[in-house]
Image (tube, rainbow, N blue to C red; front, side, top):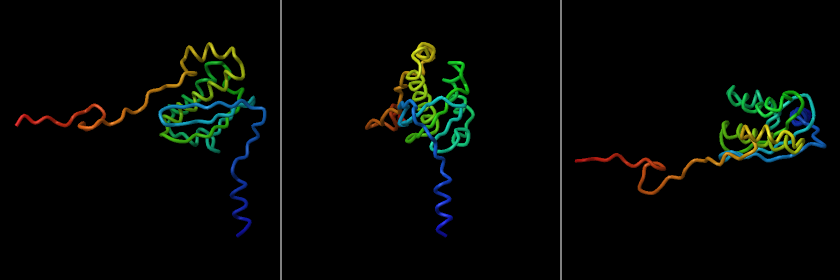
Length: 145
């Protein structure tokens, strides 16, 4: 019994990310901690490969977008830990973090990533519900009689 618990703990992916660049990305209520280093194009999210973590193809495409913009889709390895929000917010936070880390690697990437608006934080979030209303802006149904 002892050996089975040890093997399950050691099967967790241990990645060597020494001499990597770190950046934090945010979107809605999600926070992504991103470590980026020169490598072969592997992207890990919370210990899993990103294609296993994200089910939606749009999210997968969105995450690889910063690398396609700089024309280096398989030059960097990414290790990311994401928490909070849903898949859309997490993917957006990852894109923000990856873009910031790429700029730390090379300042020349900043121009192309900034024109695509990937280095700026998307500040849109859910509006709070107001008192006397059904939702944030929707009021209760009006009854004439």
